[in-house]
Image (cartoon, rainbow, N blue to C red; front, side, top):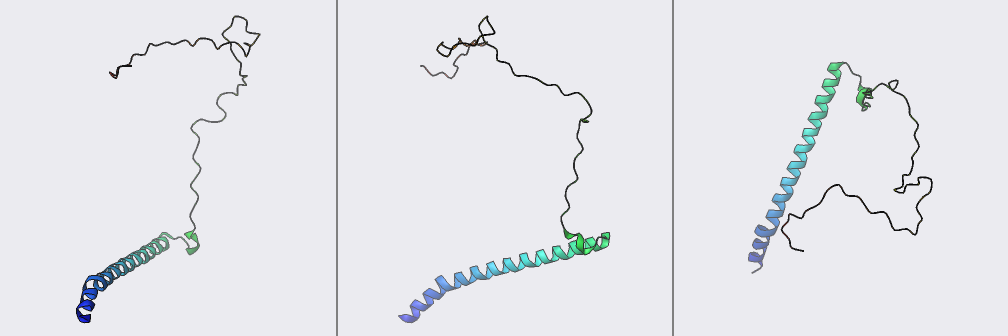
Length: 116
């Protein structure tokens, strides 16, 4: 009975776990080798281009030129003003007054077909 239990455990648990571990290790090894080859290729490319080994530091991107020259145009100062709907612009509406009726420039029509 113990032998059958061991064989079942071996074939249905241990062997699949070993296969998964082997596949994961193989993928890790392939990735590590690929990264090593890529680094060697980059080093050979830099040496061929005449760059020194200290040039491995990433370079800052060049500043982009502005589309409009700063000397073009002029600076205009402005002041924000409140505009009230009443005829007398000098006095602000009282806080107790109801807000003015909003003016709409379009009539909306419900086209969804839902009945309200």
